[in-house]
Length: 355
Image (cartoon, rainbow, N blue to C red):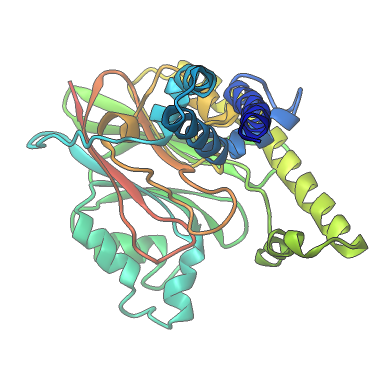
């Protein structure tokens, strides 16, 4: 009986290892060419956990079978470090500047609680002391405390801002303590999502380019998550229809972000200045979009973060989908994910120094 369960368990281990290897391919295979691999990339943390459990089992036996999960896990070291940071690496930061990125979800938290006079989000911005702030899904109203001008006026250190609309009353905004000497937008065909870039003069002889990104979302409504909760309770035609609908939304999101990521990556390569790329990618570190946009850039979380840094306060996509990436010329002093419940995302910020 013991041998039977050992063989059966090893068979399951082979399957789990194979699925994890498929996840490792997700960052390299464009989803608009072959989209199924992107689903394995989305499931990477869970596949990693299953293989780690098998490793522990074979260690406790003990058995040479441990080589299978061990080798599989070691092959994915790059993906592991992009997703998890075990040892904090924060440095002191007397020089440089603080940059913050936040998908504010239309400031719905403050508006829902009728805090338009003294918004909590403004209190949060003040507490960070950020000198460059990149917002996605902000409201673009002409007046009010949460309008672009209202936010600028509420933050003493902020003197400039640039915005781009994705609809009549929503879009992305980049605020800066430093002069914005040039600006532009990257638009995507068939999508309201966008990237705006700002050339910011941080000193007399240093200019940087900030990319404020909001890549394609999955467009999944909260009601769509009910299919996940009900999968274990049997299936019927309605559940099957809902599952197909969600699969289609995920597939469409993967494919559109692949096209957008390539366009952004091409634009980054042509930048005349050192770049910082931040914003809501709507994809995890084990994804084609992240891999393509990051390229040779540093990831602030990898350089100075700790833990998991999940940035989405929801079910899908889980873990980290908001990023701060920067040119190799930058030194990353620290990285923080602030667990403030002011949106369906958590803000991320980092202290950077341009050498």
